[in-house]
Amino acid sequence: MSLELLLQYIVAGLTYGIIYAIVAIGFNIIYNTTGIINFAQGEFVMLGGMIAVSFNAFLPLPLAILGAVIITMITGALMDIIFIRWLRSPSVLRMIIITIGLSILIREVALHIWGESVRALPYFTGNEITSLSFGGVRVSPQVLWTVGVCSVMVAGLSLFFRYTMVGRKMRATSDNRNAALLCGISTGNMVTLSFVLSAGIGAVAGCVVSPITYTQYNIGTGLAIKGFTVAILGGLGSSVGAVVGGLILGILESFSIWVLPAAYKDAIAIAILLLILFLKPSGLFGKSDVMALKEF
Image (cartoon, rainbow, N blue to C red; front, side):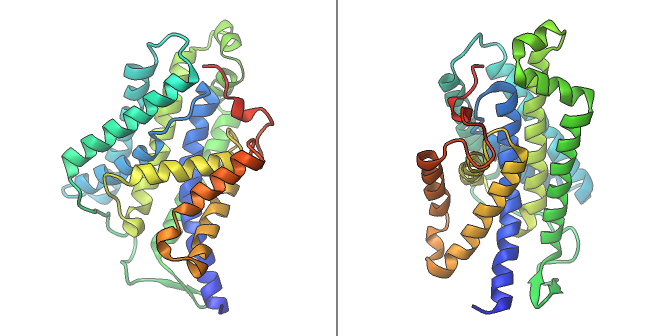
């Protein structure tokens, strides 16, 4: 394998890896606050891209993206308010089944609205034939947008949870909901906010990657599986683990097409997930009891 081809595989792996990491972080935000896995997380990415494409038909690109993110965040809030908040002491299994059902519902609504056609936003800068050269490797400017925007979101979320009052309240809700209630924190609002945040970052990621990966009504399922794999690989609840896990999965997928047909690329995520569950269920950075799932 030539050096240029090696670097090209690495760049492709890093690009997809950061996307998977963002989906995994969305999983972690809701898991940390509620103790459940939101299998509708991939649909937030899909909604962001599809809504932005529709808005871009009559709005400038920045306003189209802003509108898509806001609508997706509202969708995330409504998911909690309508389907989750009113439940009293539901089991974790019941909550997971609800999110799977919501994922199917959102996907079918998207099929009804947009059909089966594949759509994409225009490149933020340049076009599909414009590329930059780094050491003989051709990199699309949109790849730099993807890595840059997703990296900023990861850093921003870290600062938000560490230094803002709202972020600290969400962390308190995650650590001990009863204690947080006794301290005057509205834990219900914190749970809703976790859905809003995860929906928002998913929508932004969906908009940024749309020009290079395209978007369709059914892409959410694959992203949810890979995001969940990355979250487990890095350790549920760990943002650092999500980033590391995403990069590992992205690079492994990228290099897999060197030795396997491209049709088998998606099987890599399933194989990694099974290996982790057998060998180290807590993941790379997770606690030993992480897979026990907290009571909601």
